[in-house]
Length: 315
Image 1: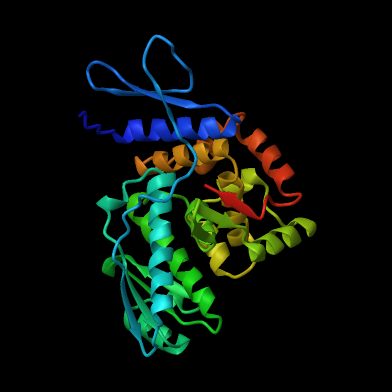
Image 2: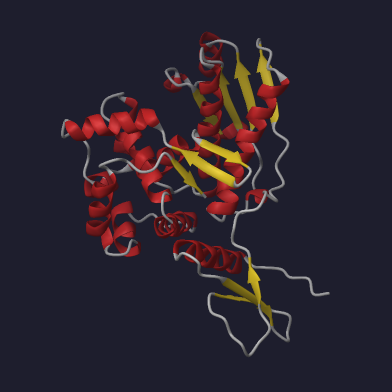
């Protein structure tokens, strides 16, 4: 029996072939093993060799999740809530592993600290000189590999905040040079990440959808060229001011990119560019990697904004 080991590059290539097959209707992917035991994939049938058709429909996940450490202070979580948190965190890890093609088993899972009230959460941050995040719902602390949150009145929002901060933890670890819009946009979308019998999917972020629609109606929505040229420090300053719609726009822009396989492939290339240490301004990387450049991206984004996409994106 031949044991098959795929390199990271081969794994990426296979997944891209799957995405191309899915985007082209009924195209099939064929696999065969040559005389040296090397595995090959193609979207074309070759009658000269023995091939088998690869099923590209999503099956139940083979993801082997992490045991998530959860510490609750002054609040009792039900078994169902503990499981919901664990599943949500592992869904985020799985997204970065299976969709973004980063090896999550080489990273250390974060631990979660959950306070019962906002005041306890604020005092904890102040004791650790984290007062700048006092108005937040949650925070990732890299030095302690820890996510700190508090239980909000709507407890479901607490679980979304945890997934948001897990995304920050992942990106901070594996893509340290990611620009602020990409960092925050991914985190906003992770809030809406779910799983069912067919696999991972995103629900549309209705709050961000409303904010972006209002900003567009008022003429306050940044053009994509300005959006991509905004340096991370200025982006964060504007976001922390609580004014404008940058955070919501970042979330919806990521939803737009994730909505189609071709745009998703572009996002993967962009993420891996930053993972390799590329510090080029986003605008120029996008212009080089998006088919047609920034001008076509601007046009595609403009058309998408009319209804801001489908209610659900399946991955």
